[in-house]
Amino acid sequence: MTNYPTIFSITEDEIDLNLLLEQITLVSTGAAAIFMGMVRGVTLRHGSAQASRDNPHETIYLEYEAYKPMAEAKMKQVADEIRERWNTIEGIAIVQRIGKLYPCTPTTLIACTSAHRDTGVFEAARYGIDRLKEIVPVWKKEFGTNGEEWVEGSYIPQPGE
Image 1 (cartoon, rainbow, N blue to C red):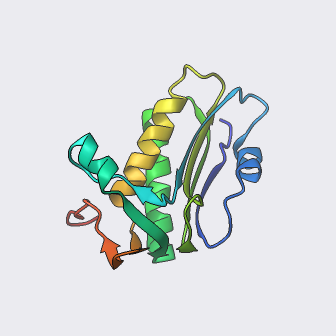
Image 2: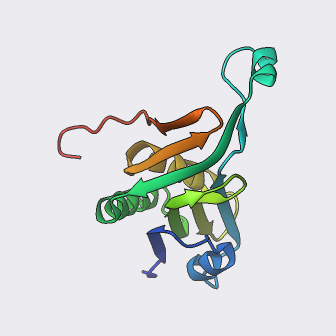
Image 3: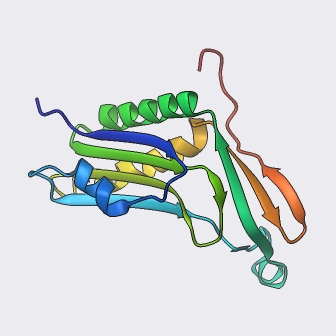
């Protein structure tokens, strides 16, 4: 069995997409699906479309924090779950930036590679970002034109997690 590359990291460094792809690409790789989350400078409010356009929420910057050992262990869990669900996935990269990040800056990357595009690579990358948001303990504080606030996630850990 091939030793498939898996990368997971919490970092203050810029996300280097080319380097990460190089690290998770094998000679048999023919497809890569990549999701990259970014800091929004303007967020349209929930509710009616007209109310959203009339009342945008502005972000000056975000500060991300994480307890690295715990967060990276959960990232490994996400990678393991991807491999359990999609045995066609070759490489996986899961990266979360921390620190002070400004609008238009990449914050999160999930990349999966496989031999072909129709082997679940898109679904695996989507699953990866959804699970990262659910279980990886990363905290985000938003600094905007109306002050600052911690942004709450929806995940509530279960006993033993």
